[in-house]
Image 1 (cartoon, helix red, strand yellow):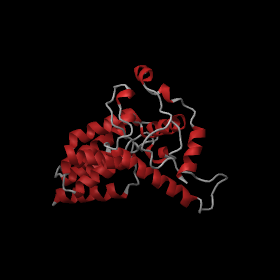
Image 2: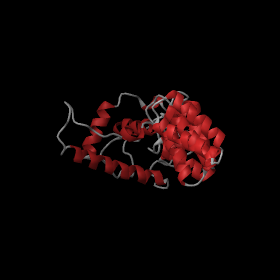
Image 3: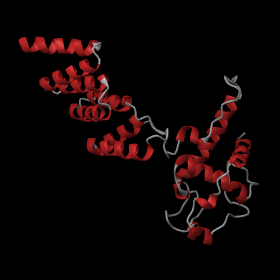
Image 4: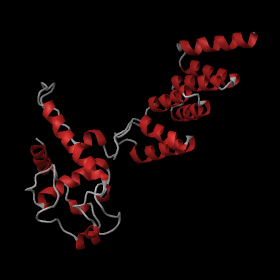
Length: 255
């Protein structure tokens, strides 16, 4: 099960571990012949066999050894306490390995839809991220903890570091969904901030201008709402919502 899975991973690992750690650490540390405190992988594996598996984990999650082990980033690996369980991420990783093995066992019960059976790996979900969350989820979490400015900065950082890598979908949907979530929470100013960013990112999308117009209408700024509904309608003359909203706005002005 899990052991068979990582036998395959070992065979597929072509990147040498020592390319991923500082030269200073290489000079002071080497893989032990018999690693200690192995609980999910085979206890019979020597360090040379464990090496590509650990390398695969770091690449899949975009992290270093200190993510799961006790040690300080930038310090030689000889200073790390690898057998220790003090870092809670180690137990998380163990449970993820058990889950991965279970998922792949279940996949064997499904008739393949292609010429090869689908297989799950760490990078299937993580794609270089420690926490495999959607863009909407991770930016929304930052908003909840630190507010709108921090959330917008986080979005910019994520786009700079992950755009084009498949980790997040930077299409218009995520920011639009965040904006409507803010409207649902009665945070109109937060919604407008997300809608404005979306309009900046996707100026040719009728949908994002429609959403921005709705945000301004909820804020009571009818002139801006009318302006952006018109912009949406110009981009998509068949947008029924923009037509209806403009009609209501005109009727409201006459009333």
